[in-house]
Image (tube, rainbow, N blue to C red; front, side):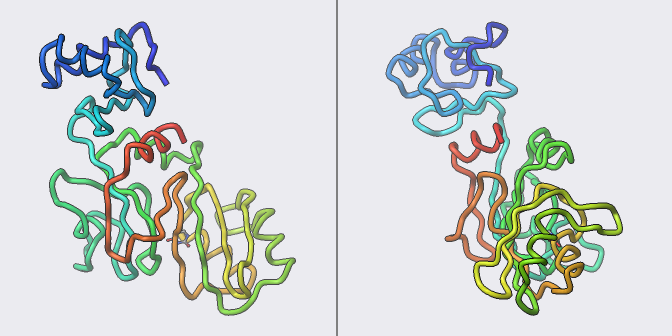
Length: 237
Ligand code: URA
């Protein structure tokens, strides 16, 4: 991170410019330890890169990057992950506030449930979905029968799909017929195709983690904003 970047702007100037009061008042906010940069209490005179650093006052993000929002949604089955559906089905953007307009980061199949990030931060979205980045995604899959030790080994080592070999993955079977699979690729219907390849089609698929983001309390169709800590963890994941 770039909190001490000599090319950045002085923190109190950034705060003052975003309406937190006079330069003097903003200096006092910093001196009182109420300002943090990327989760670390800031020092007077510290410089920040307004494009990258997350500045908070009393834990609340200040508008260094104004208007950016980050929602974590528990997508129910039957809802599509595109912004608009040609068949008129409900979409994930119908489940979150309509303003500012956000878009899903990556996709879940219409029948897949679980965590999906929606944001209007195009830079973060590009980074997270870029194939070279490969943020981890963890899934729980209910299968039509138990996996053998050999099946699990194949899932871990890589499966030959029609679009190439899958990268090494973490795979375990917490109970017979349930697969916990962590992958960092984002190919179309990847988990379903991997399971089909070992002869155990998926009956139900739920994404339970995206990089540092988990939330077992979020019910189907519910969403919440990311916490400051989650935003920081995601920016650096
Ligand atoms: N893999 C799938 O098969 N489907 C999803 O929705 C996500 C990952």
